[in-house]
Image 1 (cartoon, helix red, strand yellow):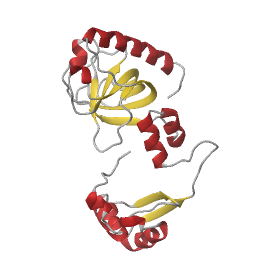
Image 2: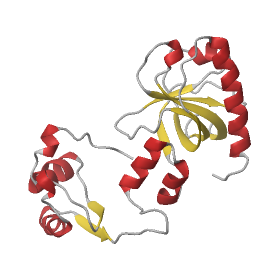
Image 3: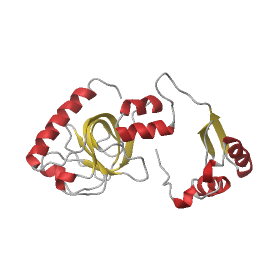
Image 4: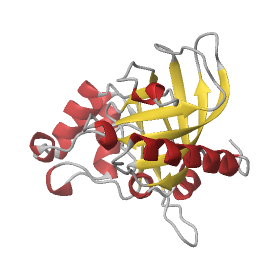
Length: 226
């Protein structure tokens, strides 16, 4: 899921400018799928009728979907974003029909995890929704390289406050794995929110907590399917 930064420039675009500058010139779309109540442009002046008309002249197709809901939620991108920011992964799954995942190329970090016995695969958040800070039970798919396959793990989203303040990223400890996957493409599916991010005064306390997190993650992942 990609999120366009809503800034002053974007907020001042007319509905026509949004279509031409953002959708056509920026994203180079060929097909747009929107809900029946989709609004866009300054003061929400654009609607689906205008989108369909401009699509026919600018060369992209438009599918307008009716609202879909059940007894406890409305299926929408707003619902998904809110659920992720609240750590409610089951609601996000109900909307997406899959676990929300973060994909990217594994980058080298400060190796803090390795120094305490928990080496991690690090991913940056580039233009995507950042879920609630904390620790998660996760499914891990290594998509490239000799270690391609499916794994279990525990991930931390945050700024690593115990070691200082760093840029927000996703750090994943893959269970029962010792391979080198720097530069490989992986997908991390967030399955269950375990706890909020904590700043520990002692690294030993962090290690004790991480052992508990990993055990809870294993137990939870054994009870759900991919």
